[in-house]
Length: 141
Image 1: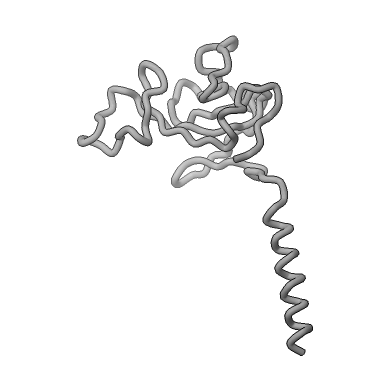
Image 2: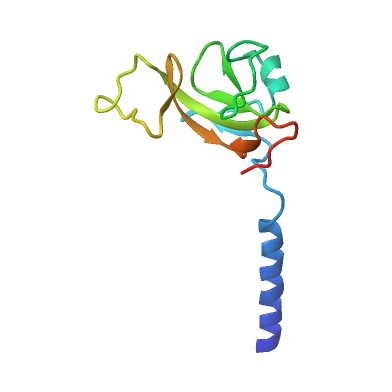
């Protein structure tokens, strides 16, 4: 009957909403690259174990915008961002400042901003940047 169909539809709708409002997460992996996908470390401990180093050195303070930034063997892309608790907080894709800027390329501000003396980066946050240096992990944005 029409009433039964409406009740079934209502139950399916409520069940769908339950799935949509579960806690936010980026899942169990972050993959980067266009052709050969590379798995990125989801926390700073894993990053260090895989050979990533903290930008500015091991004692570099937490940046209120970027948290703790890690790069692999000096490459500027990707740069992983971790919050003060060591959890993934975002990524940056950068180019060296000697790379030609707009109009000779598509590197233009925004979305690229000079994040240190030699790199222009586009930043993508997975968490609330206002909480990136707090003593609790920021919720996934």
